[in-house]
Length: 153
Ligand code: CUA
Image (cartoon, rainbow, N blue to C red; front, side, top):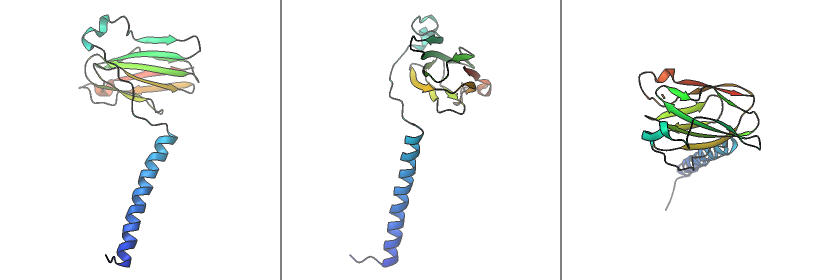
């Protein structure tokens, strides 16, 4: 099959761009530790208020790390504010009591969905400071007021 010289150049240019774009995605994902959630755990949203295993709060572990249990409910995060230690692994266990909410610690890559019926879990290390927690899933008329505070010290 005969392919014109300029046609070949454009084919190589298009293939090169594809490799470049995929490469940029893979590099930034690796550099920013972006990864899909791998934790699948279910919970009954109907009995969340009486669930003694899943109580909102911060539990400090003997090794200095912390486990934070958070419930999102129109239009609050519980607990609020959340206080965690700096430069230590902080594991969040989050779910929703009603509709889908978002849980984003602004300025960090802590960002997961709060899905009724499921527990989202992720671990992250924070630098000291005060962070805003925002709901980034539209959850109702007062969605824009669903804001919390994270204190790291
Ligand atoms: Cu909760 Cu938007």
